[in-house]
Length: 157
Image (tube, rainbow, N blue to C red; front, side, top):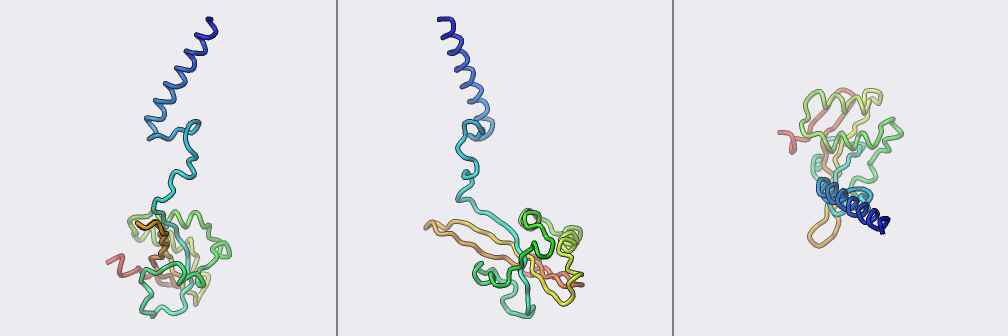
């Protein structure tokens, strides 16, 4: 009988500890949570990519476009020594683009080593609409050449 009381007490303590941990972690505590990898499903997300620009005088250069319109111009960052995750975090999480941040982005690109190339740093944003369809749109941020950085005039006035 004493063993039963011991296990009963242990079970109560376990539930109390779980309740405290779940309450302080907004309902998510690893041993007893749902799969955290799926807990952000449906929330808007933002990433970054690089597109190669052939004609910087296009009238739609700075317009928000669906991803399908630029897919054929997207560069494989690995070919240029750019780490995709680092770039995605940098482009999607930076709120204030001062000269230091832009120079950091330029050094990541190392565009100086590719004369004659024009690359566009682009933010990709995805979200669900009210009718449960997914929208993925690209937002041009910066145009880089070997010696110039141009900010999107629609975003940075």
